[in-house]
Image (cartoon, rainbow, N blue to C red; front, side, top):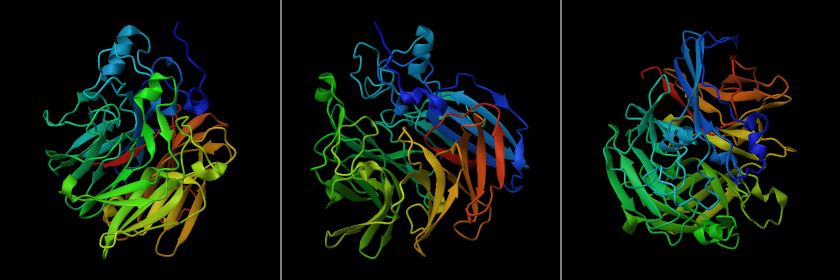
Length: 467
């Protein structure tokens, strides 16, 4: 008999919505800037059917929520990402796959090119080479039509894709190249690195040697280098088959950071060792003299996947902003905290990706909530003045990642807007919040009311009107 264990990630605003709608002429409180023209799209987990076994936030089917803005008006639509797995489950009328933290059913046909786990395409989106791709780090991406958000199908770069595809690819704002990697947990090679040209051609795939499988959720680039994070959050199929957690954070094992020339291979990578930690998301990285500087949200371990981890302090699994300096000549590593406030889901002006940036934005974690992934505000960091601003969402209001949208023809790095979906738990209603990125101490520029609840999700992007 199949049973579903009650999960907090099926309750409140984590609960899925089933209806796909299209709504025009949305109510706007305030005024949308007249030069703001494009589409905000955010991905997130949204199970179509009752899950089997334990349900984590990361397990649901991908659902895209999009707000198109033009001439001060806004429209909304949401669509499931129609993956192979979702189509099979719709045909069956029920869930077929368990989440990736449970033993897979090897008797099921593979729904992706890279193994028995369900490709949900639920984590992020990227716009590159004129295509919108929905991403899940264990498989191939799915191409999405814009602006209707209908699924075109799995995308494999004309058959050249030989690895999984990270949920956090990096697009160089100057060369237009996109760097991504794929990590494997059940068979070697455990890490493969890829480069895609500005035009969308996959031009390079190389294997990077790492000794064991780990969860590698993000990475970073600079103008000339790519930075991999080999952190001690290990995966074991043997543990899964024993009914234990697939993942284990090994706090007695140091972290390693591999720095590779962008167009190099395994023979060119330089590894640096630092204290044990875990990083879900990087902010940015850049070069200065002989050093590579990395800024990311660091925690001493993580319990976010029900991962067994021993902490000396209950605050150790809260991510906080840190900076690392890696000296390419001496091999020295310097690590330092930048803030004691817990935050994650960072963003920045993507025109500064891989170059020294003055500003960054993160989602401030709420305290006293039973769910780890609760965010009640936004933070703006100024690395030049070592200062920060806080925007509080308000009582009973929670959000997530805020995407930076540059103003057309802006002449300063922070000239633009922040966009984020916000849920008001007292009103049980959702909205798209638009803030002035230059000053978070001011009131919202606009609040676009969404006619349907938008469940909490992961990562989004802004696509300028040129699509």
